[in-house]
Length: 243
Image (cartoon, rainbow, N blue to C red):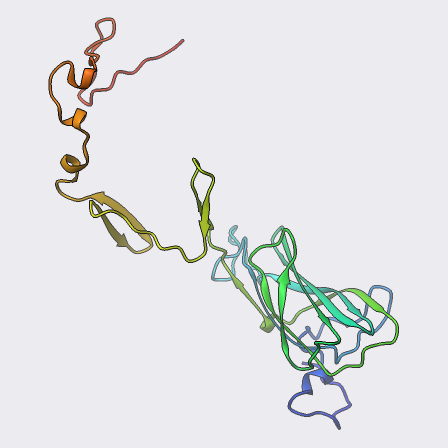
């Protein structure tokens, strides 16, 4: 990584303020309007972003080799009362963003702050650490596309199942959910697949009184034996076709 020449003040806690890390060496910390971003503002960054079209091997779903998701710092704002930064991940055609805002009253240099995902973004997060910089007297906003170093970015495949929804009541559950079944239901697992089955004798125990009754008028119901002379198949089904 590129290291700046001013090494006299380099100490364990501030050495990152003297080099381009956590940004790529090929990325200049210069805003779109030509302003140079102070190198001691952001000294550390670690993010987890969705892999999207990438699999765990780093290849795209089409089979072409790709380097994986790219994260860029798109904006940085400094004022006498706050500091904020926004990071955007690009993975295939999907973009997700996360940001952080810290007031000067609560600001502590070299302390990790959690990034919060912006509205419409999913499966992105991380922490950012600011250096011991001086808050400017007048607001300064930098818009740029500074590429974050790949060693600071991890990608993960988002979960496919996010929540269970009861279509009747509209209620839903998500997160760490405990699922239990009655004593008549057996649960088995093979790899990542789960199977449910009825225990032996459950059919007789759970069947209704009408299902147990026999005769042509059981529970007041008259069974259909045929329709226009057509009788059901071996499973008791009669298929009707409407033309």
